[in-house]
Image 1 (cartoon, one colour):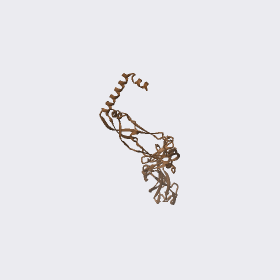
Image 2 (tube, one colour; image 1 turned 30 degrees about the vertical axis):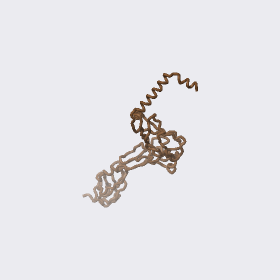
Image 3 (cartoon, helix red, strand yellow; image 1 turned 60 degrees about the vertical axis):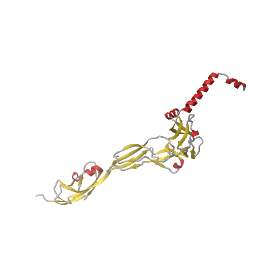
Image 4 (spheres, one colour; image 1 turned 90 degrees about the vertical axis):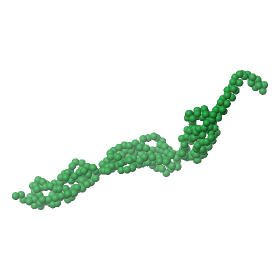
Amino acid sequence: MTGWLASLGRHKGLKLLSFFLAVSLWFAVGGEERTETTLNLSLELVNLNSNLMITSEVPPSIQVRVTGPRSIIRSLSQSRQVHTIDLAGVKAGTHSVALGPSTFSFPRGVLVTRVQPNPLTLTLEPTATRLLAIQPSLIGKPPEGFEIKSVKIRPDHVKVHGVASELENLNSISTLPIDLSNLSGPVTLATDLDFKNLHLTLKDQTPILIDLVIAEKIIKRTFSGVQVYASPESARLTPSTISVTLSGPYRRLQELKASELLATVNTENLKPGRHELKVAVQIPNGFKLETVSPASVTARITKSS
């Protein structure tokens, strides 16, 4: 006791100065004009169990209404404030995290008057990893006259990590919609998976590519009233016109005219009289002759005078 009392007598000057500064600071802060503002604190959740996932909506920040000396409040407003919530040991389920004034470490003299949201509700669920097939999602149709020949997705499976209850009955996952309305040829497109409202993430960040083979349709078209000509000898033909069915690329076949088809019968070295002659049809390159109806006509050759 005596030693403690004796120590009070040492360094009296320094002690008096320290006391004076402390009192001055107290008066300066306590006497400073007070102000009120709302601080936006970034929210950080740490030490979450790797086998759990937060499925509730978590705000990126919280708003804290504070009052205090103007200089301190100004300093707080100008710096980035972070509020950390430690989830170590928290188990699956729904938890209410209270954000009272005592949960914040603000300088002395700063009072917390309101926190939003408060309390913070967190739902944690067990997770699982699963291999899912990828299903291309195609919308619209190719332009008129074109069709899909083949669709290939690379890779065709992905490994995903997510909420176990959501993965339980899930066997495949779709890509984001791919619009076909402006595609008229082979193309490879990069796409992403459509997780919708599922709490899923890819285990491996592999690019998702889709190979589409879109080509012009091969259609059939029948030309009626195609004139048949006898050559080299003239003859009266019955019937004199036939129908010709061709197959070929949609646009070219649509543009083809009957006058571009040449139908003939061969009357070379034929004697006068009636003859059944097979009709030969010459067609432009790029088309296939499907049917000729009738396939033969009657040619009547008369004696030359």
